[in-house]
Amino acid sequence: MRILVVGAGIIGAALADRLTRPAPGGRPSSPDEVTLVEEHGPGAGTSGTSYAWLNANDPADPDYHRMRTAALSTWRELATEFGDPSWYRPTGNTTWASTDDARALLADRVARLTDLGYAAEPIDTDRLRELEPHVRAPQDALIAHYRDEGYVHGGSAARALTRRARESGAGIVTGHRAVRLNTEGGRVTGVRLDDGRDLDADLTICAAGRRSPALLATAGVPLALVDPSEPGSAAPCLVATTTAAPGVLNGLVHAPGLSARPAPDGGLVMEAEDLDAGVDESASPALMRAVGAELLARARALIPGLSADVAEVRRCVRPLPIDGYPLVGFQRPGLYTAVTHSGITLGPHLATLIDQELHEAPPPALAPYRPGRPSPTTRRHRREGRSATGAPPGPTDTAP
Ligand SMILES: Cc1cc2nc3c(=O)[nH]c(=O)nc-3n(C[C@H](O)[C@H](O)[C@H](O)COP(=O)(O)OP(=O)(O)OC[C@H]3O[C@@H](n4cnc5c(N)ncnc54)[C@H](O)[C@@H]3O)c2cc1C
View (spheres, rainbow, N blue to C red):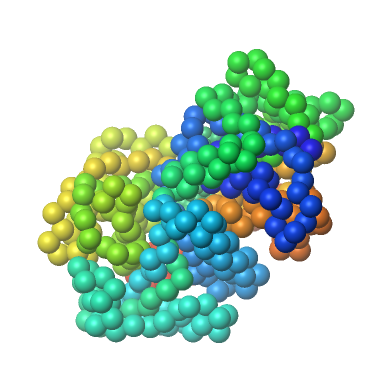
């Protein structure tokens, strides 16, 4: 089968890699001819700016939790294949709550996750000091640690997966945008590139992240993603990095008002959901500076003695399905879509499930996430499990 994957973010790169690797479980290898098309470079989209927390930290939907837990295992296996690369950081995640309501919510979350068999553990301040010696939490905080979570440097991971796909025989076309889907009698037959070339395929997989609705619309195919240009949209956000701050954090820390983790160059990556209110796609330089300064102030309160400065504030857009869940499956003959928030956590695992669907049978795990499901337009805005108030996120704003 000739397969064309549009987009070399974590989803498209993981797919191109999976589809060109030896088939898992001894299934006869498929003779697919895979081509990956990327407008800029691998990892240049959302995956390269993502906070990229690997987690299944939401017990609210046990099926979705199960899929995310499987996704964490898939990452572990992938990292082993790559020889434990520096872009995969299984560091654990520490969080705490310091108001009565937030403490009750966090205790409930830890209990429910533990019931589901997830590694979630209340810890005391001595243990916090061992895990994160430079971080200060209030004495009365309820602290939890999630040992099996971590993060990924999304851009590096997408590049490594693309490289391995190329080594395994995939064709990689970078620097060209797919400007439209080509169709013939209702069947998608490939794409037209911005230089006028047509790339033909038996199956075109749209993995263009936030840009997917625009590409799909060229064949009249809808996709239920949050529109980043809508006033008050939850899709646009700001992420800041700091200058070098070596060793101040070992893993992810989700404190009230600040999410932070180490950046690849030795600084920190920081974000806070409350500061994204009012941020739109064209956030002004003044707003970006103000958000960067506030994030740094919060980081200095979290890590006394932190001397780093803001290095960069980036505008990002989440590919956020309206109901928060992945959009994965055939949309037309010859056309498959794979778009999701939480794509860093889910990418390699979705690639495995899609490979299974294309070469064996539709995996039951994908059944709830088909793009044509009855109510993908019911707003839930599920996002990563971060909260500025200190309350662990509730089921409506937490972690896909
Ligand atoms: C601030 C922020 C925090 C996040 N936090 C987390 C988190 O903690 N954990 C988590 O798991 N997820 C998180 N996410 C979500 C996650 O980053 C995304 O779900 C994931 O990166 C999406 O990957 P993707 O491959 O679908 O999209 P992208 O990485 O955007 O890749 C799509 C690629 O397609 C290319 N492209 C687009 N259109 C075309 C075209 N027409 N022709 C050719 N190429 C095209 C783009 O250039 C791009 O490289 C976060 C996102 C943001 C913005």
